[in-house]
Length: 251
Image (cartoon, rainbow, N blue to C red; front, side):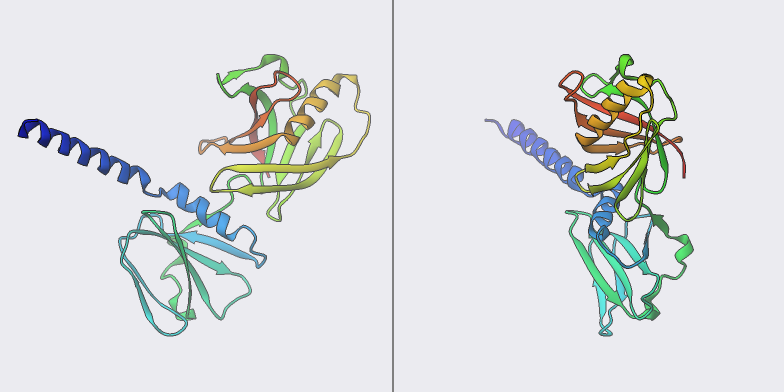
């Protein structure tokens, strides 16, 4: 092998390694998901805030009075507990691998201006979602025969305490949900009242309820109005992978 060809191979290898390194870096969206998952079971009332740009270094004074210097690129979050005024809490997400570091600080270590930090919220919690259609996941095509006939009869509301409520035609549904923000996994557990809503709702109601039981994942758009997609294994219609499409309609 001549030296020129060897040089080209080495350069190509270095370029590939560089691309892999870049792709392995944690994005802002991924860091938000890591922090949301980390704090998901926290029972104390709090809000989450983030620096909007990656920090190349960061320093902070701990509760022991030590100056802690973070010398690697990281995403910085502040946990603002409503009742706890003795300490302040920071979460540091390392850009290179997503590892998380929690730091308790003196009260004098409040952010200079919390109003300039971006508040982090659970993507779909607190809003009302209306079921509008069903799509085949593999082809991303609308399944027209499964479009609900009643446009406002099927709704979901995810609350902050892991409970879920909504409507299935004329019946009220209620239950719980379990979510993993790092993987996008979502499970819904619910029951509903059993009123007779009329024969015209029978097909839609049965399909909607069975589909919710089979939901395993979700995605949400960042456009307006927001679109929520709940992915599930269809056991009723085509034995394939479909998703329920929801539109945000307010709180």
